[in-house]
Length: 436
Ligand code: ZN
Image 1: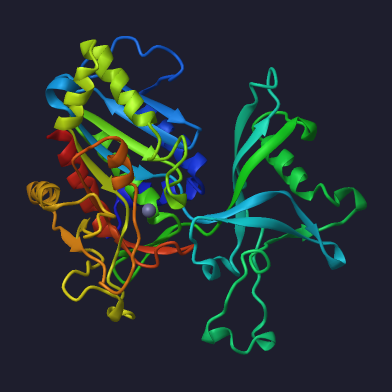
Image 2: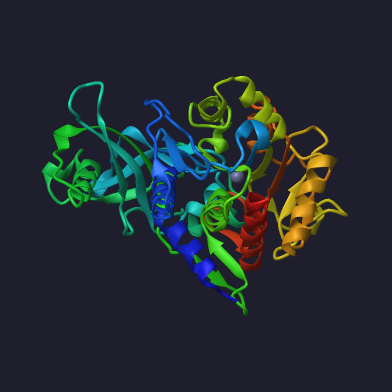
C-alpha cells in the first residue's frame, strides 16, 4: 500500500524533529520547486502573475505564495494553513544536573500538551537552533542543530518501586521527565557535557567555539524512524503527524498544483500548541501584512487587500481524532471519523473551529470533485475537546474557511497513528483546491 508519496512523508518527518528543521526542509523543497526566498525587511518590489516566493518568520514559520493570473483584488486567494510545532520538552538554561555516580541529567520544561508517559524509555535526541556570536551584538547568527543519534532517555521507575504503576500514575513535570544525558569520565566534563555535544555537532557544519555560543532553543525529539505498519502497511506510526503531516500535504499540493487565476498561499505557523499568540503564530499580523503588501504591489491601493480577504477561502488543516476501537465511549455517537475514511471537517457549536455549514459545503464539494471521501467530526458533548488555529487567524483576518484534518489516534503522543490512504486523499483534495 506504501507509495512514493508516503516515503516522502516519512523522510520529511524524520528530517523534521522540531519546528525549525521542518521550516528549513519546507524552504529547501520550495526552492527546488522554483520558489525564491524574499527578505521581508526589504521592499517587495513588483509582483507579477506566476511569481513564486516565500518568507520565513523566526526561522519557525513559513509562508509561500504563488501569484495568480488575476490580482488579489479580482480573485482573492486560496490558502492552506497548518502548524510547524508539536508537543515536546524544551531544554532549560543551565540545564545540566550532576547526580551521584557522575550521572548527568538535563532540566527540561514541557512545551505544549504531550502525553508525557509516551516519552519514557525510548531513545531521544536534541534538535532546534543555536544562537552564535555574529558581526555585532544586534546581529547574532542562527545555526540549526539535529543530533542524529540516540543521545538521551527518560527512564521509568521500576515496577518494583511502584506496584500501582499500571493503575495510572501522576507525573511531575519537574521531577519525572528529566532525561539522562551521560556519565562524566573526567572532571573537565562536569558542567560542560551539553555544551561539548553542541559544539561537536555544530563543528560538522563549520568551525564554532564554545565561547561563541550565546544561547539556544533546543528540544527533545524521538530518534526512532517513522514507519508504516499493519498487514497492508495501511497505518503510519510517527511523531509529529500533528501537524507536520498536514504541513507536508499542503506543500506537496502547492508544488504539484498547476497555475491558477487565484493566488495560492501556504501558511505554516508556529506555536499553535501554546495558543498561537507570538509574532510567528496565527495570532500575529505578519501574514496579513504580507497579503496587504502583495495587494498594494499589484493594485497600489489598500482597498485591494480588503477585496481580496472577502474573496478568499482558507483551509485550516490540523489533525482530527480518529475513532479508537478501544475507547468507543469517548466519541460522538453519530460523528466519529475512521482511519482511512478521508479528510475530516471539524465542527464545534462554541466556534472553536472555523467551519460552518457554508464553508463545510464548499470543502465537501472539493472532496467530491477530487473523488475523495470526506468525514465529519464533532466532540462527544461531555468531552471538552481541543481547538486549533483557524478561528485565531479568522479573528485577525476575517476569512471564510473550514477547519479540517486527517484523523489520527493518540494525538500528542510521542508516536501518533495515522493512515496512509488519508494522506494520499488529502494531497489530492488540496491540489484540487489550489487549482480552482
Ligand atoms: Zn495540531
